[in-house]
Amino acid sequence: MEPQDRCCEYLSGISPVWCPGCGYYGILSALVEAFAELKLPTQELALISGIGCASRLPYFVKTYGFHGIHGRALPIAQGVKMANPDLTVVVVGGDGDGLAIGGGHLPHVARNNVDLTYLLFNNAIYGMTKGQFSPTTTLSNVTKTSPFGLTGEAINPAALAITYGATFVARGFSVKKEHLRDLIIQAMRHPGFSFVEILTSCSSFNTIDMNVARIVNNQDLVNPDHDVEDRLAALRLASDEKKIHLGVYYRSRRPTLEDKFKEMRSSAHAKAKSRPEGLVKQFL
Ligand SMILES: Cc1ncc(C[n+]2csc(CCOP(=O)(O)OP(=O)(O)O)c2C)c(N)n1
Image (cartoon, rainbow, N blue to C red; front, side, top):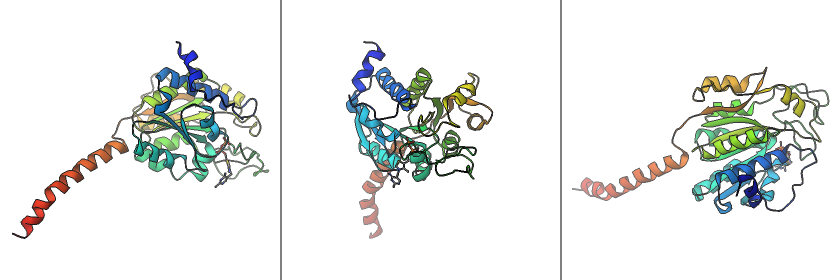
């Protein structure tokens, strides 16, 4: 069976409740195609989310799923992975969920290199609550909660992830489905914390800045000459204000949280074994 035909095996049959024209349909499609390509059995996959339109995704996919609470997808996912390291754990959520209320979790999951894949749907707005500005809304944007524009600079999710210590960082675009599918596959194959910022649209509440036309006219694929192991070069690409580069910015290897725990467990066991003898010696 071709990967495209296997995609249906990953859909739950529940129809997405997203608005017509929402970029999230493209992301859902890329994600199930990635699952099919990786031939992952549904019972070995867990999708964890917070709250928001993006966070509804686990309902539409036939894997284990956990629709959590606002901003807490990453710690929940870390708990799932620690409890059952055999599961492949993918986290999904919006820019508000991940960078506003949940913004305190990303640095720690990244620096600890927890073996998760985090797909951050960046539509630069709070979609579900109907159009308030988010941490990624750009200065020029007028929203329901910023009728005269914004006062603060927008957060750059991919640049943040590189700075925080994520070991795989990429940026995709919901309209470029095949390219996004390949990024998701690479992120899921990566051992450690992989972060994919997915630029996308909100057809109902963000039609000014992050709209599809603006991205289409200003994007290019990451140059094949880019050295993905060079962290500063990755940061420069992610932070380029003139052009949006789509592709893998950064990739490196270091022990995961699970590796570290294994190491600690065995040295703690070794210490515990030697302790009775040492204790007895103290009294001789
Ligand atoms: C503790 C808490 N605060 C606020 C809310 C209200 N709320 C629900 S979704 C959301 C923001 C969603 O925006 P985003 O995460 O960007 O996802 P999108 O809907 O755009 O996909 C907010 C503020 C909530 N559900 N819980």
